Length: 403
Ligand code: PLP
Image (cartoon, rainbow, N blue to C red; front, side, top):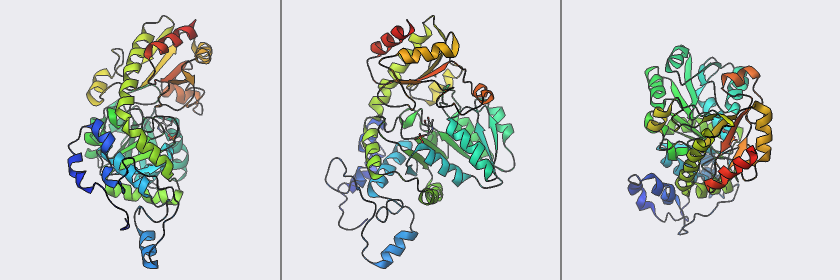
């Protein structure tokens, strides 16, 4: 950090470790605030002036320097990284231009040609495609498992396995995987464990505290929270972050300072937003279950969810996502989503507005019929990301669309 930038509150770092999550979401990273401004400025620059040539050489070889060239690092990005690391309870975090950027870098950091990854069979389709396409091409083997079945995970572990990669809650059928048990399998076999925790956000679950090595997020979703940015987060140990940063720099998946700043702003209201989304989603899940037109509802805290007890143990609330099947299958589902007025038809999730989508043709449309079935995605399944609206308006919208 150059000497002309003032660290206005460097003395409050220690006390931050005592803060509860809601307070931390507001105040984390304030020790990285280089001015007296309550809201941190955006360092909207691609490059930084150097004092001499030696300094240039030093920064060029350094890990993630925050004042050299923005693909290497940037003060706004560094501040957001510190905040995300604190919220996840990780040693360090890296920000990327998208969730897929973070997932790609983590897999590149953990897997070498000739190694093997055990991967959950019901994940965000981009993760599945990446492992089955790119990583296979560079000589990484994989085994798909139902990671809700711990025996299946254990028996898929091979001599050359170097990573277990899961997603919980999983997308879109909201399966819950026992994070502590998977972390134990990883430790027992000296294998790294990675979880895509996007659907929970650090407000609902903190996998590093349960023994996970790597936590991934599409920051585009709950962390940003307003559907106005794309970002990815990788939280882990300092040494793994250093390894992955090389890929961030070389593949160029760096977040822009403005989007890092939007993310900083977004996380301040993460607890409020997500709590309201969880309240609405739980109420909507129960409402949907009461309707004759609905075949099945997927929501982790419903009595009908097979992993309800586990979900209650490892998550603070059931999350803001509800998936459901209407009686009558694909044709009815399609007419239904096109008849909604308040709930909008769109992919993505985690924003303050409620949105709905049809996974079999949209987010998971690239999967074969066989893979869709293995992921539990029926032709009529709908996935709703519940927002912060008055839930009575959402119920009325569903009723009018069903009519
Ligand atoms: N992980 C999950 C669970 C997602 O839902 C998504 C995107 O929808 C991603 C990762 C990829 O994130 P991004 O679109 O920010 O690259």
